[in-house]
Structures are given as structure tokens and as C-alpha cells.
Image (cartoon, rainbow over the protein chains, first blue to last red):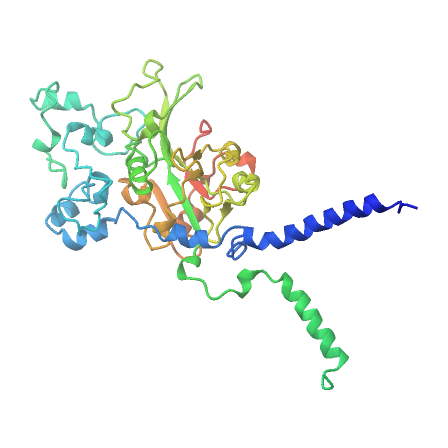
Length: 163
Length: 245
């Protein structure tokens, strides 16, 4: 007589085989550092940490560039970090701390570079200094606002603004 | 064998069984110094002038593809009859001077700029929905994406209530603000904080007693974005208005 449980037994053998195979493959699919610090791959923390910073901060600039230090400290831009306006990483020197070839913006000397902070906008906070309509300011001081060649830096020193 | 009692064998067996349940992290060798921080981010709405220096710095520092943003600046203008105008042309990357003002003829009665970035929530929906544990909250309180594990399903992008995630078109994996994890672990500030000319963006360590960030949190009136969602963000805003969404 045929075993009434034959087919169930065969099915169970297949199921058990799949479970054993799964358990056998599992260690190779889970990264070694998974669960080291929590439910994620622990090595990723170190990979993310290992990237090199591009911006260096004003202290690093001041370590070599003292030519404008006095003017900056006395002027209205004393608290403005260097890298807000300067991002000139190469400047011909590959050993410069900012020497990342992918970013080579020269500092913007146009009027727009000043306007980005100092042109009057309704949404700007009221206490912010020297907010005005630039065209009006130029007219009042005898300059032609339609001439885009005239830069703010012809009258104002960007390191120590104020007249 | 003779010197081992039954009690010894039971003890060893129980110990071995318990050892299975001890997480690996507790037995690992000593962690580096940068584990000893718990970061928090503060944005002062009253100081932001909407220059977009943070957006430009972020693009340089993290090589963010065009038309995607890890941080961006929104301009809010509210009229007397409570109509809110919001715009963020190119994420505020080139400032707001040379762009059209949507509220030009509406005579707004109050206006302000709101810089936005990943809020690094403690109960973050993005890590909850990630099917492969690629999104996670690091022990330092930073929400990170493991690009090696990410399968690019985009579930986290949909789950984030702040819209701070995107799928990187080059790698087809999720990406987002990391608070410049590679900088803060080396003692630097995030790139956006480094270049902010007015100090509207502040960043610091909650574990450091007497730090500026702790002083602000204990004295200033702060709020988070969308507090009703209980995501418990770790980006705090000073002077935020009800119009901000």
C-alpha cells in the first residue's frame, strides 16, 4: 500500500532544504559590519567620514593671508567668512588647501555679487545694514546705474566697506 | 571531565546562550573620538538675508547635481488678507535680487527667508520605510544614506514630509543633507554654516556643556517644522512664523 503521507513528506523535504539553503547563504549576503552600531552597515559611517572637506573656514585662510586682516577686523565685514565671497581654490597653486579642480569659481567682482546681500528686498530683516536700492544709490552719487561696468568696488573696499 | 560539576556545565551553557543576544556594538573595540557627539542645528529666521551663500557652498562641498538641493532657501511674503507667497528660484542659489517677485503687486505686510535642509528627525519616516536599512540614524544623531545598500526605490523620498531627499540621477540612489558628516567629524562646521555671512545658521554639539547651541536652546524661543507630525526634528528654528510649511 502507498504511504498516505508520501507527498506531504516530499514537500516537507523540499521546504526544509530551502530553509537550510537560506540559512547557509544568509551570512554571505549580510555585510560583516551590519549591526555593529545599530540596524545599518557600520562601515558606512567610516566611509562617509573619510571624504575630504572642500571649504576650510576663515581660520585656515588667516593662517597664511594676513594682508587684509587689519581692514577686515575694523570694517563692516568683520564677521563675514572668507569663503562667502572667495572661492578661488586653484589660483595657480595646486598645493593650496582648496585645490579642488572641480570648483574653480573666481571671485565675482560685478555689482550683482554685492547686490545679492545689499540690494533692498522686502523679505530681508530690518536690522540688516546698508540695504538700499542700488540704482538709486548710484544716481545719488553721480554714477550711471545703466552702465553695468561700474562696480561697487570702485568706491567701496569689499574687505572693509563704508565710506 | 571529573573536575567539572553539573553546576559548572549549566552555568557555561547559560552564559553561552546569553552571549548570543549581546549586540556586537557592546563588545566592539573602542570607537573613535567623533562618536562622542550629538549634533543639533539651529536656524535664526531673524538673521537670514536670503543671499544663498549656503546653497552655493553646499553645491560645491557635496557635488550636488543641478536642479537638486540638499539645502535651499525659501522666500515668504504674507499680505494683509493672509495670502502667502512662497518662492525659491533655483533653490535660492543665485539669491533673490535678479528674479521676479511673485508678490510684486500684492503689497505684502510681512516677509522673511526660511532656509531649509534635512531635519534629521529622531522618529524619521525615511528610515522607517527603508526596506534595506540603507537609511538610518547614526549614533551621532545624523540621518545618513548608505549608497552601497540603497536600491533606489524612492520610498524614502516620498515618505519625507520636508521634501529634503532626492534620487541622485548619476548613481540612482537616494541622497540628502548629511550635515556634512565628513566635516563635522573632523572638527569643522557644515559647509553652509561655514559660509553664512550673518550667522543665521548655527551648528553644535548637545553633549558639550556650555556650548553656544545649548545656550540658544535654553534661552531662545524655538520651534520645529511641522511639529504636528511628531517626527521630532533636530533642526530648530528661531522666530518661525505660522505661514511656514
